[in-house]
Image (cartoon, rainbow, N blue to C red; front, side, top):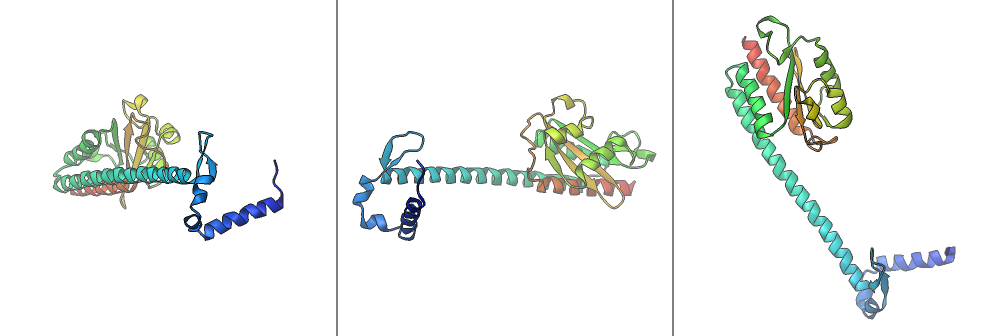
Length: 229
């Protein structure tokens, strides 16, 4: 039944009074046992005190879930930071491009347990021709990958994965989510493509801070080895 504006005004006044006087029921504790409110999801009426306790339990449970999610994210970030640190040390010690690429593939395939790790770097021919990672700067696959990243790391299944088809290696048919990491320095560009069979491994909107740092480390190490050759 539709309430009149007078009834609504009265209800609003009562609600406002109770909000402004949260100690009201301390002074009128007998009302806590008299007042009845519907129990969400059950239909049966319960006392106001029981309902308040239920609401508090729900809020505490939600806070506990938030705390667990926060701790899980913190542990994951700590582990990623440690792996990047080990990669940085390995890249500093790298004596050749083989060492650089080996360290990157080890990180992706063994430590992160990804199902696909592909690297494309645009360089002119010469002594680097024949290596799978190096392609001409105008290579169609490289240009398509760079157009996707626009210089920034990118995560996602669906649309991103569809655009990355043809770039993910022999296991591509089973890849369900992908991350693209741009590699750039003043004279070169490239991309690392990370793929997983798990569609939730690289969800859209996932944090890309560590992916960006990975790209910076790898590009610096590759450039150092190329400048030596």
